[in-house]
Length: 297
Image: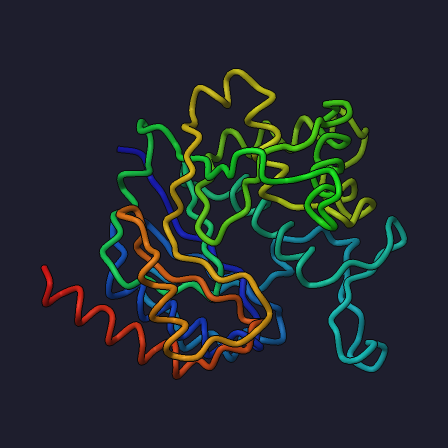
């Protein structure tokens, strides 16, 4: 079997949620080589205690070109981190996290990568070895889920097509965004080579010049456009996680109801940190849910 590792970008605002993720990975996830955790350089001391023989905490600067630099705290607006350069407009932390994921998957030694958001918590056993080569890599796909008037996703799809030289997309089109996504290293490398060939620029610069992009829609658009990449992937609507994407907090009853919507493929819960759902509530409900599932088994 080939090698596979986990990749999680995080930051100090998600520290408590990342603690839940790290504990759940240690309890439930197996079959992987490393859990690469990528954080802002200034947050490194906060995440270092989570290092283990398998979990490696790395500074985001290691994954960025030298010309892209973080703005000093005194010059930040509303204390939001910004990275600037003379080559493109300033980019935010969520842009930088996407660039870091692409760089990691293109340059690290493993053949496959499981990208995991820092606000995901595993509650069942997950053998990532089943996702390694020579097995077909799953590509999460919500069929025709992006309409032409989708406020963000439509723009991200158009950016992906422009960077990959694919022409204008037709809508509605597929969505490939999720909380637990599998990437193939050779496919990522071919994707960034395509971007550089089409744009005539380093792929990081091309992304920063566009700013409105999604790493998962880039990857999905590339796979759909390339026969060799398609042969390595199986399009699936089965998510590994039960997900909550809204910005309203959930109480315990709502979390229980959400977990009841799980499918047999689900091994984790993903509750967006910006929802403001208390970490303690998530922890307590998952402990209760896992206990019930264990008794039922």
